[in-house]
Figure 1 (cartoon, rainbow, N blue to C red):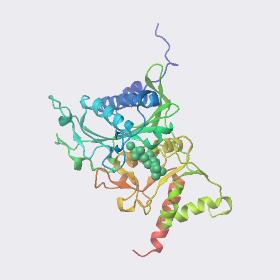
Figure 2 (figure 1 turned 90 degrees about the vertical axis):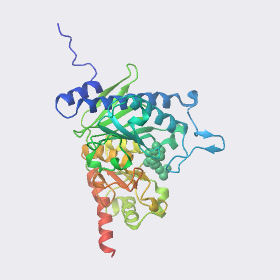
Figure 3 (figure 1 turned 120 degrees about the horizontal axis):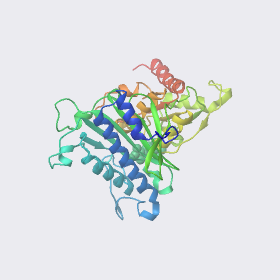
Figure 4 (figure 1 turned 30 degrees about the horizontal axis):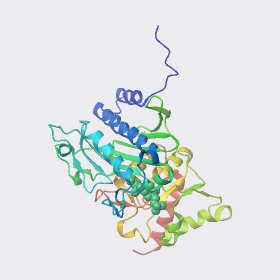
Length: 354
Ligand code: AHG
Ligand code: MN
Ligand code: MN
């Protein structure tokens, strides 16, 4: 007799195989997702060790912190997470190259693994540990990733081959290491959440087809930057703060974890708007958050869940990238609220001669 499996956990592996059968994903891309998510499980274990594992604190030597390409001090776990992802993918066979927040340039897979490695079809970009300033205080952090197709005929991809708009992403996802470890994934057919079952070491489908409510009364922004914002952001947030008696006619609540993964996970779960706008401090760099491995994968996940993502002046996924580590202003989440923020920018631009 065939055992009744209707109540058995629905694993990530089963989900991906069924998506392959439905023609939504190729076998080599399915296997690449398995490799990346296995690496996330390892990172989750390292993060979970905390002070017991000696993994907290800054990378480098005392008095001389190690600095990454962004000019930011690296945490030990930034380096560990980057190494785990590099090692896992070097031997996967599905990638032509990879790029990380923590590395100046992309790396062709044949350089990473020269022992006869054949180049696969895909390019992987990742933020190995997002929100790492939170790690020492035991607040959620995460990994963000994005997969692009390697251009036809390119065996050894260089940085320029990654500069494709977000609409070209085949896969986007993040894994959040919080009270539980949750993977949120899209292959262009909805956004789905998988919780890590620590007892069996497997990601289990827990929400199929996440849906972001169209309206919200919750916003996320680092308010300490308020005095540095540009006029449209000043007016937008002033109207949120004015509440019920102001032009928006309702009260708003505010949350800011300062880990993008955790803030985005909240809005995918219960709605909200997340923003990291241009401000006088980051204006010269174009923004704070990075387009290729922070804003774009999150934008795809949010759009696939019925939300919207914008720079304030352009749909995020249509931005033409000019650099691997390019930064952009970010507004994403509940559709009507993102549209409201965009409206403040449009109205300001219309009133201000260029
Ligand atoms: P990372 O740790 O990968 O450098 O990213 C940190 C980002 C993002 O997670 C978060 O939303 C933002 O920086 C927090 O910035 P503030 O510290 O300026 O609030
Ligand atoms: Mn980050
Ligand atoms: Mn990071």
